[in-house]
Image (cartoon, rainbow, N blue to C red; front, side):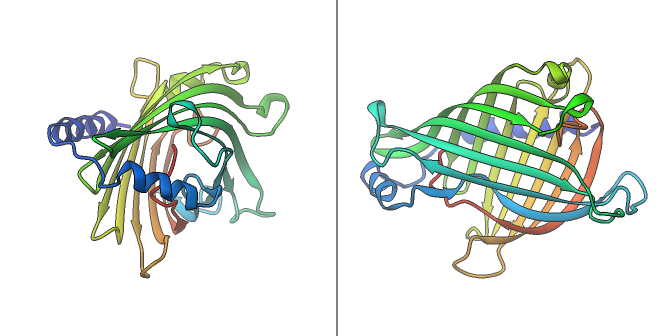
Length: 274
């Protein structure tokens, strides 16, 4: 966690740098409306991936190496825009941690995250420059007794486009109903910053997500992702992920995780509401 403050400063520095020369992605209002009408209602939401790896702060073994995978999709509930040009959708994301190298290969934890949201594309002079969404979400690990972890929250997201290849996502949440893990916010805080950068004609992608816990110390997390697309006309990527910090999963949210993993990912199309 000693690098958390430094990387947060880099994120803020990028925001200040690009905010002076903000330009929208070149998608007009009419073109976007046609894309929405033609797009399937059921699509990928966040990244879908299967990755495996080892810790980088201790000697790797079958007890501390694992497989991590995420499944995420959404269903748009309205074909046409609602009042104020908004769209209603359902979403579901599941993140699982599989101790495949242990005897009997148990799942250490799985986190289930259903949501219902309202999204709105933002335009300036009929050109899209961002989008905003408001969602009601639940997340839990499906366990009982002392291993039960769950919380509910309202989240507000604002995605801004910088030039053609850079985006900044600001996401904040208001939590409620998390008595099984009352110290959760000390480790994950009240929001996150994500920075996305498309490289080499989207053949490579880079992203970073940072959280700062609500406590006064350096609790929080940083997740770095590097994607490489080996084939043309595909949304499939080789995915390298580095995670440092707390709150990677709900069961052990208060335990430090330092992992490097690699595998395969399927990314959503550009047209998203998140």
